[in-house]
Image 1: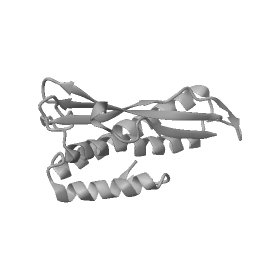
Image 2: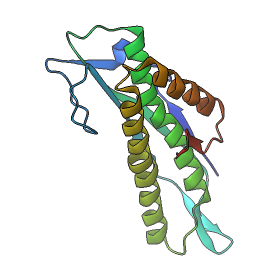
Image 3: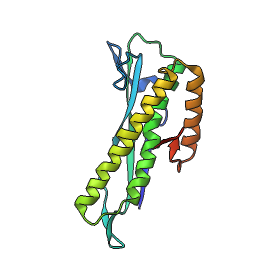
Image 4: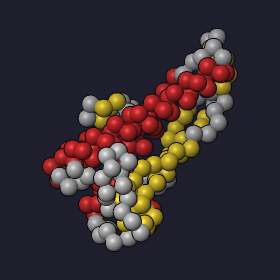
Length: 174
């Protein structure tokens, strides 16, 4: 069984952003921001069969990550802002890779139990862990305004993206 991840696109451009007439609000802290980026995901139906007496996912599948991004129409479209927003999108990529590994390792006695574990894994990686990363990143970088911490987070993300087996980013589990 191989569950993989594909990001479409890998790198954001301003063409991936919806223009908004009002400034977006970060749901994590209520801050009004020039741009807001998260990700959408499509986890396809996964085939399963019995492996060593337990149900497990078999076959191949690809989880697709796409951007969900918006920018205030009057905001300057700078390289720095795009880089900050790319990090938010990259969180979807690295947590998605961790989800794929988790799904491949799942074993359950029944189809219902396998589905329950599947749903819990999605919640863990894409909601809980991704949310913690997004929140701490924005808090420490002051939504990208603190260049020192922005660089620390971006450099750490580059290392994480380069290692498809990475399990954490700056001490946070993926």
